[in-house]
Amino acid sequence: TELRRVFLYTTELGEVFLYTTAFRRVFLYTTELRRVFPYTTELRRVFLYTTELRRVFLYTTAFRRVFLYTTAFRRVFLYTTASRRVFLYTTASRRVFPYTTASRRVFPYTTASRRVFPYTTASRRVFPYTTAFRRVFLYTTELRRVFPYTTELRRVFPYTTELRRVFLYTTAFRRVFLYTTAFRRVFPYTTASRRVFLYTTELRRVFLYTTASRRVFLYTTELRRVFLYTTAFRRVFPYTTASRRVFPYTTASRRVFPYTTASRRVFPYTTASRRVFPYTTASRRVFPYTTASRRVFLYTTAFRRVFPYTTASRRVFLYTTASRRVFLYTTELRRVFLYTTAFRRVFLYTTELRRVFLYTTAFRRVFLYTTAFRRVFPYTTASRRVFLYTTAFRRVFPYTTASRRVFPYTTAFRRVFPYTT
Image 1 (cartoon, helix red, strand yellow):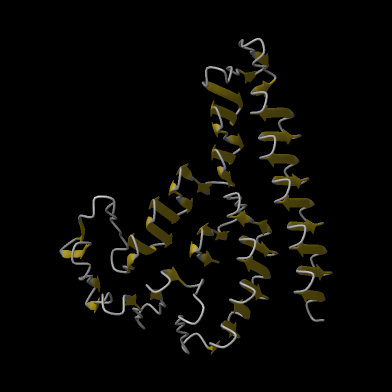
Image 2 (cartoon, rainbow, N blue to C red; image 1 turned 90 degrees about the vertical axis):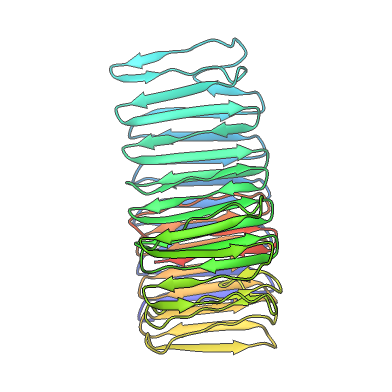
């Protein structure tokens, strides 16, 4: 009642209903219809995502945009009233509006400094559109397309290879780049100095996440993983696991020559004078925690997962009292409930329902993660963003305002989910 909110969650109907009068929002999440509908009157946005029809509908009156992406018809519809343009691309008929591939010609249009030069998709070439700083670039090779749209510094970049898609939206200097070739993906996400880099070659993944100067590096060779986190020089040099060779890391005079897949043994970690030697082949677990930097890292090779996604009963979660938190772990129900009074957060993780619900009153966020339908939906009122990721159709839809971001990545049951405020 202080925040004037009503929250209802029912597992039978699989619904989440959040209504906040303070920010005047209505949030409805139904797993049956698989929809996410947030409505905010302040920013005047409507975002609807349905996996059945495979659509992403974003409507913002503040920036005056309408973006619709449907995989069924493989369309990108972008309408912006600010720059007053309409762009439609459909792979079914392979068209670019105002250019059609039926005649396979070149359609240039200029009004003052606003030019449209589209090139036919039959030859799979380049379509650039610029109005002042606003550009649209479309490159399609059959189903593989690149569509970046920028208005001011705001860009939208989707890249799809068959069902593997990437939707990139950046506000200001905050960018997201995802490259997928089959299952080999590279996802770097940078806002200011904060980056997320993910590289996967088949099952061999490298996940690098940096916030400010702090980075997290995860290296996996088949089922054997190494997690490196360096605070001193905050650098990570990953070496591909395809060749199963040597990974050297040097920062100034501190060298780490840590991982060889042949013996699958040695992994040293040094931050200044603090050393952690955390990888053992016997139990195949890594759990380094350093109180100086106050970090928590969990690695279990049984199910090869990284928390905040933990396996059934094989999980370890460390919570530090320095930040004044309460940690509860129950193996029967397989739940992790974290409540922090300092940051005023509530974190609930249940493996049976395979959900993660995070609600923070300080930053006013609602985060719901369901593995059944493989979705990640964080909704933040402070930064006013909506992010939805579904592994069924392998989509990434990040929406960031300010510097607060969310990046989830899921491949089958192997997930890495970092959430940073």
